[in-house]
Length: 312
Image (cartoon, rainbow, N blue to C red; front, side, top):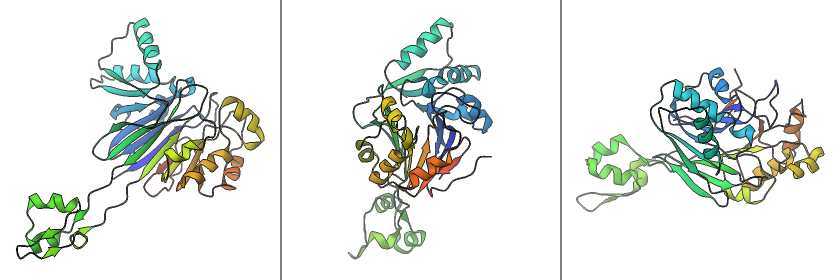
């Protein structure tokens, strides 16, 4: 089952020829989720050959333009492509009103419904779930209300050994109970332990997206034990004062969050346009937390084994 993240954009407020504003595509079990939608997102989706018509859920961290200005264009394109099923957008209060006003001004009548889900920027909340995945929003510390997102797999059922079904004559009705952890009792009263009947499932994996934020200890609590952590690193420590003034983080601070959260791996992004060389971000973070990657447009990172695929 695929669980991976594609970096569509990893720059900060000002687009450059090297980086475009923030956006990511998360795929889990054939479901596509868009995380933030900065300017140029739909072009990046086309560039990396992603079937964005399959996207049904979009998560917008906050209302700054480099994280949401691509949304009106994407909605318009989905309309022109003939979409007719609902699109769910999770966002901060006010973004829904701005986009609906734009649609009114342009006399646009969508063929599909946009279902707005307004985020609570003050506490960790479950905002979406299906049979295999849960998505939580949690508060970050920025100049405007801002949320991070945690995508966490649900624990899997145990897999029953086929030979045991035949050996003990286990009925279909009992199989689900056994997969849920129950032992099996034979007619003579003999108890067959669940561990002998089933395979141990793969452990559930998780991905956390920490958008624009100043360093805060609470972030580590919200994403404790996460397998892959994306945390903004707009500045280097030499520009710490600027980071504090703008409520952003340095590479070193992002690494500190990863260390405190006991994350398996850290992914840096949201680089300020003032920097041309990204290598110092990697070096600075690795002084605090060794397992670090630099986000780059087109980079695909499997969450399951936390290995990267280079941009094509």
